Image 1 (cartoon, rainbow, N blue to C red):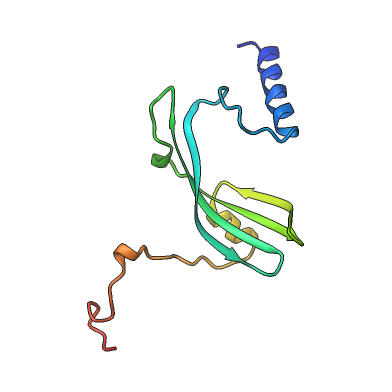
Image 2: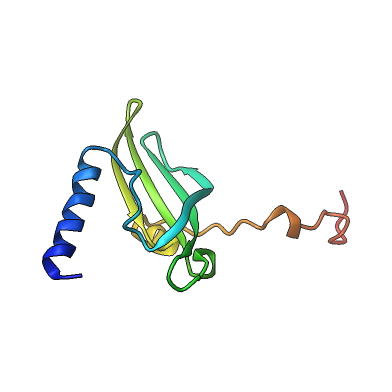
Length: 122
């Protein structure tokens, strides 16, 4: 693809986005891309931090997106019932550092031991 063809493609993608149309994805090298929210943190009355991950498959190489590091974060800044700002991070730890928050590692329920399994009394 020539440079001007690439530029035209990117312009058409951005034009779609400017209209609020995020449906067209045939230009992407990924198939079946989706995002799943893993955790929500209400930081204060106006900010919600969401940790999520992506899934999908690279059409060219056949690599699953889940095999790559895809743990991301999004900060929703709210005013009333509207999102006024959305900040995205490609790495959760970077979001935590930028927001000066401590990491909280949740242990999946399947890995948790009960108090009795851990040898503790109730």
